[in-house]
Amino acid sequence: MDTNKTKKIVVVVSGLDEEYQHNVFKGLNTYAYANNVNVSYVACFDGMVGSATFDIGESSIYNLIDYTRFDGAILMTNTFGDTAMRNSIFRKVIAAGIPAVVFENHENSDFYDISIDNFGVMKRLVNHIIRDHGARVINFVSGPLGNPDGKARYDAFVSAMEENGLDVDPRRVFYGDFKSYDGKLAIDDYAESGLPLPDAFVCANDSMALTVTSSLEKMGYKIPDDIIVTGFDNTFSARNSSPAITSVKCPLYEVGRTALEIICNVIDGIDQPRSTILDAEPALTESCGCKSSGTDELIEYKKLTYRKTEDTNNNIHMINRLTAALAEAETAEEYFKVIASLIGELDCEKFTLCLSENWQDEFNSSEAPLDPDYYSEFMSAPLIWDKGRCRSVEYFPSSEMFPEGFEERGCVNYFLPLHYSDRCLGYYIFTNSEFPTYSLLCHTLTMILSNSLENIRKLFRLNKANDELNRLYVIDPLCNIYNRNGFYNRADDIFKECAADNRQIMISFIDMDGLKFINDNYGHNEGDFAIQRLASTISTCCGKSGICARFGGDEFVYFNPNASKNDAAIFAKKINKSLDELNKLVQKPYTISASIGSVITVVEKDDTLFSIIKMADDKMYEVKKAKKSARKSEKV
Image (tube, rainbow, N blue to C red; front, side, top):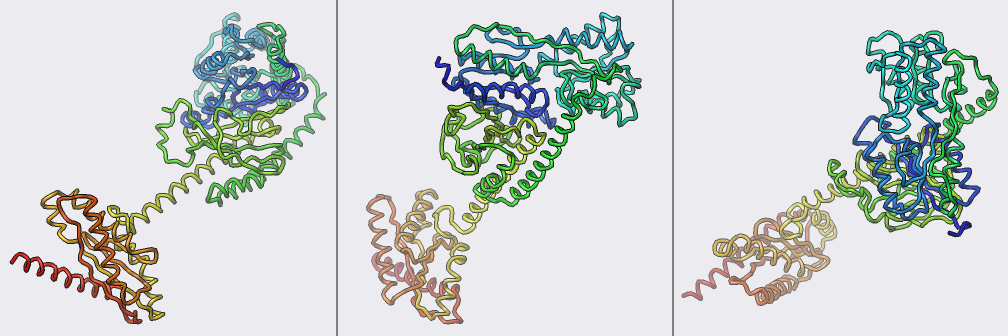
């Protein structure tokens, strides 16, 4: 492979804004920009709102990936708690025939793996709080056991407890999902258990350890005087919290950089070790009672905290304005315009909104999971915001992922799902923006965009339903011309204008001949056929300026607002001639015919539309009587 050509790498990950992912991404992205690598993160925020149905919609983003379009993959499947999802990703990558680096997975020989010794270093940490701090009763806040990191850290905890002759009480194990909120849930679970306070809370990562600490402090406990708390990953926030969290120091930046370097070397044909293990070691500090590691990072921490606070305030302000503006959007075009006007405030180079071809269609949410691909075959990109300029792509295959194709340059893209419940609406792409990884508001933004898009979809469907109801209110469903309501709605105002101008009008009342005979002898389907053909004939003959309607049963009315004295005869002649031609064409065992009564008059101010229709109706009956008399004379 040409080593100078831009390599296209997909990174599959769950979650973006936890510090673990953020630090790994920093290593990945630094290498990507420096070495002409186009990196595409495909991610979601599953497990955030406690809804399995919602998570189906979130995780559907992984069905978008066409791995054959990439040169290689980095699979951060250690961030997934769902074993089935991980295995599905593995199968697709193997089927695509591209090389892949997997985090924390030594069991699949098809992939290169990169890891730290989760089991060994976690066991050392647990042994430390047992042997050096005398902990005997320990609560464990676990990650999901379906996750290799979570399983290894849990197994290490159990092994250390058993090795030291201590029991693992199942009531003192809380199974979380590595999310920070799980720490609060773990303390809530402990508080409800009624169990005595343990000597320590050992947490499977720092995000949970930080919220365990804050939750315990809100309950009045002091760390580490009353209870020890430990974490894992030694994140910046954990190191600089008060108390600083005893943890495990992991080279996360190096993990990300090394993973991308390995996959790029493999693509270039450079041999790489199948397994890479990076060193990790306990970081013993304040929350277990060891001496503080110092405040060397305090100045940097203050700067970072201020920047994050300032950025968060700015982002909240932007998202609040976005929410308010989207609430007023009533059409898809207005929705796109609102996003285009504000998205640049998130410091992104490019923002691409991609929608499924059928996103506005009606759907039954319960049926969505039956579709194995979730996304429609073709999509549109109605908004591509690129350095302040906007364009769109009307139509592209969803398998291409990018509506305008891959960019041949070192860049970083983040694919995130747009969905309502388990129904996919589309996805969006941030290009060269840190917002998805540093901001806790990225998930909030995703939900706002999704929910607002769903509101637009519902409004669109509601308007279509209203249009159909209005149509049904004024249109006769059998004949597809106006019914009585539609006729009065359309003709009444015109009639009043004619009265005000003393214009001459014509009202014709048309009654079908022999409908009862047709129904009785040939059935009501034939009767309906005859009524439809007569309606079509009247509609054709009434012209563009005239208004015709089915008044009920086999009765029709025609209104000509600009009539001359000969129009009644002309209209009747056209109707009768058209019916003669129709009868010759359809060759039915009966004849379709009609009796027509017309009134031509100058509308006076005291006239009503109904009164003139009644006059035309009376004339029609005179015609019908004359026809009956003529038939009797013929029989005699």
